Length: 293
Image 1: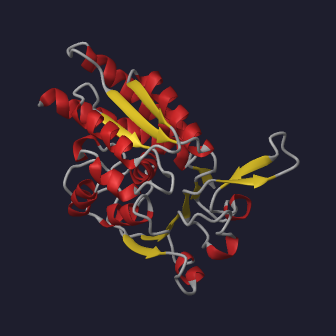
Image 2 (image 1 turned 90 degrees about the horizontal axis):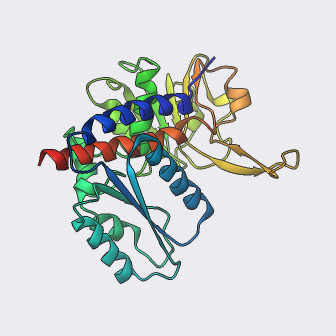
């Protein structure tokens, strides 16, 4: 079994970005700028945005964070989005999800200019991705493809099973892996929580990508020997043996599945760091387009 080390690969990517940013800003009036909007104080969201800020700083990308109160109205949020859409100093921005329940997430996503949508969630960007047109690809799927590519894992002709059909991870990654090119040319089966006899599909998978949102859902009985396992989930599980009182686990039972897998991504340290690395990649892409235009 080989570990798919997302932390290691993300550091490689950040070094590459830092080198490119340093070269670009020598001949430009400013460097890349990524902004984030966070509404409320969800702990997971706060942690992610803080990690994004640190990552930006490490590669020379300017980072701005707009912290809005939980009770922020839709009108107030839309006004800020409009401001960032028109700010020529900001190359891309994200609205951190989930949003408080009184805010319409899809309406908010739709309000972001596609060219500044570095999360890759806007319908135009998703549509372009489906058609194979160059665009902003959702950060987590993009990060997964980078992992497969940098570990030189063969995808052509392989049976890839994706568990989870969200527009953020499952659906986009299933489309990307079925397209021509590398990583791609896989035969992809998209499963979800309502798929009957799910293990019949997972046992046939050469590559299994799990994004179902259930802690340690996939165990060794659901995986064939030699499979490649990408675990997208992350959950806090109570654990009195830990000083923190909890431990982090994924959607895969790592201890049992790792004994059968040829490659497996851990939690933490697998897909998570790659999501932030891919966000930086999209920011740099957006910046270069503004400098060209």
